[in-house]
Image 1 (cartoon, rainbow, N blue to C red):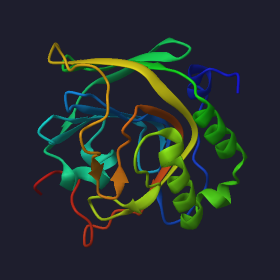
Image 2: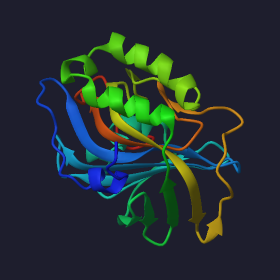
Image 3: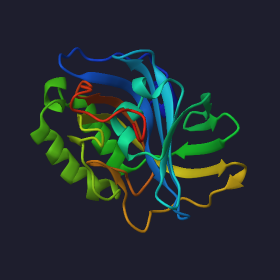
Length: 240
């Protein structure tokens, strides 16, 4: 694999056809823990089956409270599936600017600045090779995803992994991270204050069945969810 993360990430994205699901395609940082107890994640999804593409930044503070910032309304972004586990959801201007073949900066208006530098490892190269060869049909099988989850956790050194399960709002989810790179270096400032060096949390965190990695990991791929049903699922907005 000789292409840079940037060159692959900037290729136009499309969603495989499928019935009975809501889907998103693009890239993001699956999660990035900091030794201070802060946690960040990024979703850059130019392709969405339920509306326009969007950017979202997830932030967990040391007290364990989650906020999702999104460039579109909560009903058309990550909060559609995770809202009941959040302290707040906020619509903000978000930018993702690539500063090199393997580096980018994320900004949430004047709230947050996050620098990310990607690397390469034998484990991510192997997982990416597998992800590129695996037929689309197999990415839909929960048994295949369960096996991949069991292998990925120890192989990547990220703790527990679940590529399928139930989101906090009640919808099933299926994550298809087809290409992976480790985050080699990262720094972030929230309200102008440096949140400290990267490092695993004292206890791995999760939202519903989705476990957040204990090591920074960048992925390109798709995510699918059960369609929202107001009679069975929680609202995108916390407390409603």
